[in-house]
Image (cartoon, rainbow, N blue to C red; front, side, top):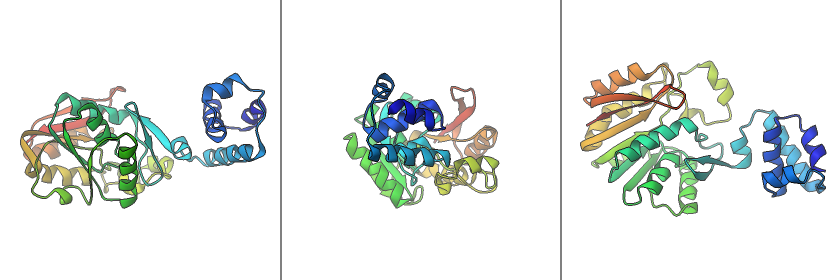
Length: 261
């Protein structure tokens, strides 16, 4: 029965409830409310396979195949990074600027582009992704939420040559090669995490090319990692951007830096 299955799982209790709910098709509240309910053998075996994957440190989001971001439930799989709460700051800063045209570089699951489109339905939103597998996930999420975003396959600005936008946003790779934290992220696509020896290669490329793709007064907003804010500000200023500013996330970590074209 449910009580015994949860007790024997050997993983975090909340995670066990989530996985059992996914295996049974019940809600998490139903799993809690009816601990005496019997579980069919095939369902138990499915739950057991979920538990084994979790014990192998596979993220819950990949096991469930979904992750909530800024109120949107998004499909995710190992082709895309799992959307994280700190990236919501990038969305909030984007929405504050109320742009009429937006470009999201390295869209992954589509989290940033789709959330901006949901809250600014009149804006024209384009999203670029170099991974065809990731782009397919983003497109499925757009269909699921009936949000019209122009998805483009390619590297950074290449698919939008000659075009300018009021706002360019990106949560690019910013982890340094060899960073010890990568061991805990081994299930996620490394190409979406690692950007050279200091983690700033992608940010340098984006910043260097951004002025040619910003409308007059347009903004570039980039997410980055702990301890990178000063270097990112210098990169943006060196690229000719003005009013370069850094904003902290809810944990007080300098998380997004931007500048005007």
